[in-house]
Amino acid sequence: MVATVKPQYFKIFHRFTLSLVPELLIATSLTLAGCTQESQKATNQSPAKNVSDTNTSKIKTKVLHMGYQQAGDLIRVTKVLEKRLEPLGVKVEWAQFAQGPQLMEAINVGKIDLGNVGETPPIFAQAAGAQIAYVVGRRSDGRKSAIAVPPDSPIKSVKDLKGQKVVFQKASASHYFILRVLEDAGLKYSDIQVQSIPNVEASSAFLEGKIPVWVTGDPHLARAEKLGKVRILRTAEGLDSPGGYYIAAKQFAIDYPELLRIVIEEMDKIERWAEAHPKETAKLIAPEQKLPPDVMDLVISRRGYGLTPISPDLIKKQQRVADYFYKNGLLPKPLNVQETMLTPEQYAAINPPSISQK
Image (cartoon, rainbow, N blue to C red; front, top):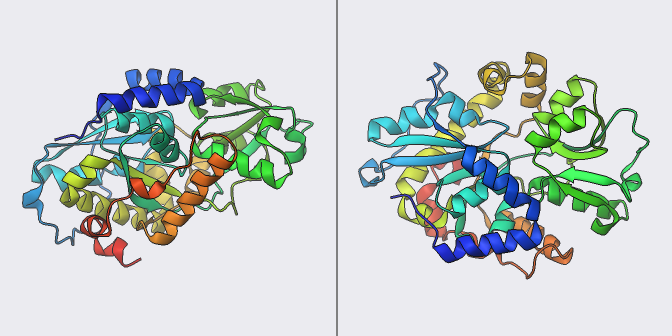
């Protein structure tokens, strides 16, 4: 069965986001209403053959609900999950969301089972009472995210952001990014005028010169760069972010370890294939993104590859992010991210050898 979250958590989530990130509710509601579940044309691109020793007879669910963001998803485009799971009687359905916070709410209300987000959305979701679990980590070096201004902007450095309107999606990875960069420049969060807008909506406004400062990422950043419409003040490279994660509804992760093991194995294989074949990867994703080849090549060149196990060290890094938000007054109380982790035995059950040996 697909895990659902108890009604009280849905109410808590909305009360929390209403007080903390009110703009998020409008974007989330629109995205949840408009997201589509779809089946895509199969591609002929395929990673290595299956070598898993998973006991597939224990997989009882008939549908895996996957979420992905507006920036697209290599896993969905290549249909590696469909190829592996449909022979086992499991259908894969996909739903698209503007950014990580919207995807997290969909997990919270039981619309999807698993999805990929940055380090920040699960922290805000946990603070809202969502029953989630960190499944596996995802590498990122920060090159694909940046604080951007128009080319002719008088803003020359991060210090010049004081008093400026800065656009980004609250509760997304950009939220942590801007906080850290402001602190490095001797500024406070209250020194800027925050406007929360999802990237997909902010992109056109920025290209039209209507946004003075934009904290964004690929493919929107790459598109603006290739159009000559952006000057980068600072990328997220060097920021001590733990990277991204695949997050699941907690009960789903507990109930279906055999299924998750297969999913993680297939995701890791296609990630490694894509890292070794950047040109082929760009050609696969370009039609989905509707981006010119040069933009897609730039996106792929900065894409993080590889999955990592949820280790004690990674948990400590994620805890530091949660503590940082609390220190800056953006969470109502301290969080213990360990509460959203599975047990070591449960992680051992879902991690294929390619992940557990990293």
